[in-house]
Image (cartoon, rainbow, N blue to C red; front, side, top):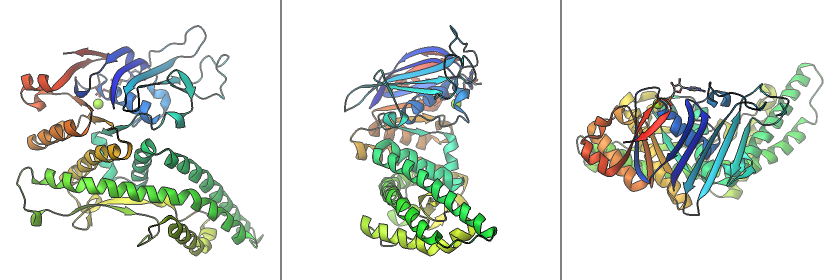
Length: 406
Ligand SMILES: Nc1ncnc2c1ncn2[C@@H]1O[C@H](COP(=O)(O)OP(=O)(O)O)[C@@H](O)[C@H]1O
Ligand SMILES: [Mg+2]
């Protein structure tokens, strides 16, 4: 798929933008802080309904946007995406808080979503547009907390599997209730009020948790296997670029799923269900003591391993960069494999961190793997020969809230 149009109104530092885009390589060049990342952020937001970087959605609304005719200020972003299963138009409105509340009731959502002109919920938009975003902050995927890796899996899977998204919502709802129950039991016990029936009730919560939890575990495992399959080869290529290695010399690279309880040999759904339930039973005593759910997908993790060592802990910065690059490139192929339509790939300012050979390799690989690749850079010289670049890519100059074709 590819983005054909991106329109912004009062989004970040864009007051008004109407941008047409071709398929293929698209390069946005410009100084720092002119709005390059914001373009990718807008498209990411339209695909996932979430910003990859904003702390609050409110910060997305231009500081210069003003209330009009008594209605609060808002940002509007929309895109037209050409897909194999047909074109789609997505639109998101983000309304500024605390303005014009006489018109917009304060209890209504500050985010409005439309798909093909019709009001929809976030879950209806998620998955319609598929994107893979790679930015320098993605190094946190390797060195950061497990929650970041779970979030990564959730966003990746939710984009291609609606049932996963629903299971995730169901799981977090049940988990919150189960945790509430455990907390309550802990307090009762502390107050000396006994917990006689607590195990029976806990068993009911268990089966609810397992229902959605099993699907999440299965899909995360499949996703990591699929990504791993592709990442191994990409990683080997990236390593071998500067000094070709024989197969025997290649360090073994692996993405390893680390679920909250051992899954060894447990493959099919029925066995996994029984196993998860049995594991929950084993942790009941401890859970009642601590007042919190101790096992399940909310405690999952995965690791990037080289030669069996976790490179989040033992790897050099260079090894970590290579690993996350291999993962991101693998994601494109995996998503296409799952949906039959390659996602839009967005590389935000990452080329400057790569040496010449890797830059070359990445540019060649992505052109084959994705139908459209959006790249931001402060420096066009990174792409080598300018005349050649103009032949293979559409070039745009970004200058404080404006975008012009070069
Ligand atoms: N809500 C907002 N209103 C106005 N300007 C904003 C808002 N949020 C961010 N900015 C500004 O937008 C500019 C673009 O940021 P960014 O897209 O990250 O630029 P780049 O990627 O080109 O470095 C920055 O100067 C930032 O201060
Ligand atoms: Mg940027």
